Length: 544
Image (cartoon, rainbow, N blue to C red; front, side, top):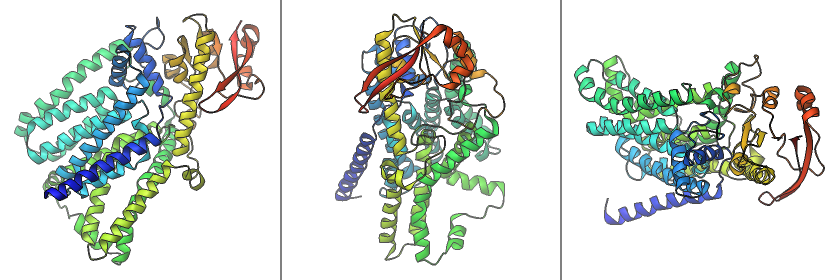
């Protein structure tokens, strides 16, 4: 590449990064759940350990150990956690875009310009932009995951065993950030076994020592956290699962919407190009997928295309995992963000292959126009237009409207948390609430969660068939008699502001009516939510 072309390329890369920054600022929102992490981080920074309420036993009400530690470091430095967590998220996202480019260039062997395509897709992806400023660990976990996988693939391409060692260590960092890092590490070990049949010396000399860079620190970490918290998995995992087949169906529906919104539109270019070339799919497939007659042939093909097979493996099994756990309710398909680079690498390589296959005097224009149309089809999910075109996603906040709903929640629960912080007598006063994020971060008092995220009893409680798996993930568990046995000072049953004071919901009266009647009074206070430009009566229960 000559100096002029290199300059043009650099400008284009900077333009893509700028597009991403504009996109993420436009969708900027600290997720309400992020404040759960921030509360744990504040308690850790104060020397109280990994506890939800001070003086109570530790509970792993988070799935992002390393992110909690990082946020505790911010708190220790007296830095505003929400803002700086957003800065770190954006930096991690830019890092992910750079590693994705390197993956496309060095592993998929695309040229410099074609290698920018998956980076452009990330910049235009609503999920990737949304979760960059969410205050959560999502994009940092994504950076560790794609980096670890890139280094693993680079080892196969370059032959430098140091990449293998470093790649496995980075995947350990991913595991500290989210437990799914262990899952990705396991997939790479499985891929290694598949591509090294009979190569015992290579395995013993190179793979066994390098895996110790992951296994030894993981054993130390797992042993500590099991002894500290008492369970093999985070409390949140138990709280959000247990729905059986219903949970899997919900996860499958969640997955169908994600692929319909952010993957299927990218197949517009090959479909249009194939129409121009009179549907030569049969010949295209025979050229793209070689005939594999035996295991040695398969092993050789995987070795020669290790990046593609690695991305396919991670994408497929991670999707199965998301279906198994029942998907997620939060805006912009949070669970799929870490594997977006893998998905877009696969699609970009496919698009480039088809573009080259159909290349003629018209294909450049057709490919460019249809690719722009595809990107616009994805970008529409980041605009208010999506509400008028697409249906509401079941048990999910949605895309653009989901981001707005998330922002509304965070602002509203911040106002409510600040209110309770003013009226409480001391830290030992307790508030029972379903919205434990922003409320708990702003109210310096004991918080009792209604759905088991920070409560081991509720998280592990067995419910009758049909109770779990069909509703909002993470919000299905509940036991009002148990909650009221804790004698909360305040009980919050709604976050909405109303024109008139609200009545006590029938569900509460049915299940704990006697307790409420004897021990609680209903209170209403007029509050103003300046962020959402709303005001009205906020009604709750107060213990006599």
